[in-house]
Length: 287
Ligand code: FPP
Image (cartoon, rainbow, N blue to C red):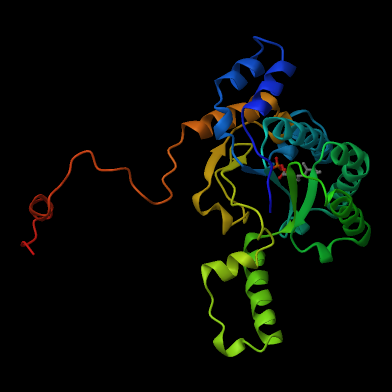
């Protein structure tokens, strides 16, 4: 999947749009435009607590959370992020009260309905990941309309994880690979490799996220992108999702840009240890 190019032009446009000297402008000006994460994933947590703090029903928190989604999609597109994956509803979220689940569907359909023209106009591509065939029919239909309408766009990908679970994604990938092998008569020679699993994930044509943001201060992955997060940088903020705006996003990216990503490798050892020195340090007989 082709993702948009990022860099100086995006940052220049963003800085021009912001008020010079404002907190957002100051933060944006510290960022390296060439190291904007290509793919950001978000666990949008804390809607309920945000509402509770204000003595409002939980659904008011979800409504405010949806406004935050609108803002973050816009800011990420302006920053030149290539893909944004949002955890909207997990396979475990069916355990919530029925009215809350139904409100989430209504909000999602409202978002899709009202935002689609603007998203399409801005070149955004909407995608979904998860067991969407088990969603209420009207929700699945509206989401599919959104995916189809924006499929030919060339801008940022907004990937909505809905009825999603990291474990179910891996199970579905394995079953899909098996079914394909059966259908093509290759079952005998089927061998599972990382590449085969990767090619059957819901997110098969997206790069793994560079940055995972989790709001509301919980240090958990919550069954999100278990395969894809292997080398993702994790950023946790105490801010509740409805309060997560441009400043908070820029802070997360600033923190990301300070990380030293080694992907399991090491930098060259400044002290070159000869084989003898290593044997001596380990206290084992020389080879
Ligand atoms: C977690 O907060 C949030 C959710 C389970 C739902 C997220 C959904 C939205 C923000 C609405 C629409 C989404 C899109 C993509 C349009 P919580 O209820 O677990 O909060 P708590 O931990 O404080 O109770």
